[in-house]
Length: 626
Image (cartoon, rainbow, N blue to C red; front, side):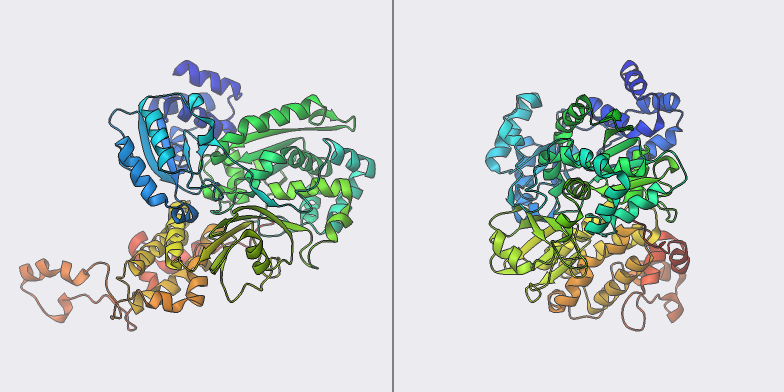
């Protein structure tokens, strides 16, 4: 082990910023992170062992205790549940003779749930040792169980188990473009760097990650910083359940994405770029490395690109299973080898990003569009869409439709048109933008996808009338509680309480007072969380409460409040011992309205004052972001 770790640390030039990538290699080889490896890394990288342990514990793909030689993770996305995931997981556990969340006694296999793996168009899905498994059914599970029990190496497994399709059903401006390798760079150099930035500005391109900040302004801010060292980062950590467009773009359009990153580097004066690839997309890693190698060979990366004096290269960094790293400052922390905890902002990444230097962070789709604009000019993009939302949007469509997959539309398209195109019938509602987005009912299908109406990072999940919307809310509440980074009290405690309140209501134990407390808690978590995760975690509850109040009411008991724990009953023994039964020996559990005060819920779980939590965790103004 010592020789192996010495070797990977040496290959990483003993840089602490490479800690995440080093840990990935150790986890892959030993199926956990041994204590001896932590001790050795601490010395080699000059990092406290406690810091390394903190990083290991932060990411769901790292483990301090051994996992199976075959680590099976089954996607817990709502779309996988809609496709029968629960019964398949039970079947898989029985076939392998292993409990969910456990390692089999012989150490050969472990089985667990994981957050959405980005395969919602071909689920139920999962991962085996990080590689994607798609379209799981009983027949496939029989094969997988047999291969594991025979201890067959993964490279001897049938290819169809790992088949991942693009499923592009509707191509538009971006997906139809065929850009010759190097064409965007040649056009940018010929036109001039400043003029190219003007074309991107004129195009109206805004970040495609959801927030919609104007791309040209971000690039200009970064270029004007009085520092010589700058960075370009492509955010390919699309962890939002129901989103998988970046997976397709990197599989079939990666060269154009890298071209867009290089155009950005020329504009801002960067020498180094990073593609932060979510760990669930490990199957793309080798292919992407080959494309980068080809670009270097063709003089499109490296020293003096196309003889224009631009020195720039791109490195791929793999994530390790943390939804929060989709937030740009958390992603930068992860790139630096740390736990992906969002930073306080300002300062913003364009002024102080990677290693404290000016950094542009953009989405995969944004860089793809930038490459097209560099070749075709700003008019090509600006002539499509709406006045405030130029160009097209690539959607990841899943759920109850005949043709789940990738669809590209001009901004301004109605929800109903999209539903017609993908073969969705008898639709009850659509979750636009994933769990952090907006749920709309079938009375709102004339609404339009645009920054001024329904903004989205790309997720579009369809639910027909056979579905119970509370099942979706329940799934999303558990997702946010699991993915909270734990940095601030309103999110750490609040998402856990939201999960418990939703569990109680869905299971039929809730009361009218619980719904009141739920709404109050939603507002507290939304208004006082540190970053976007907490600020949007209540969206599924709030948007469905607004549209389907009767659905919540139908699950309630005919009482104003049912306590989760009987405080007064717990004191009965003490009262008997003290021979007391007066009013002072009893505890009340409700406020005047019959509901538990939200502030007391927070303090009871976190041991502090809720007002203090609000002041300490008041969110900064949102950053210049995607």
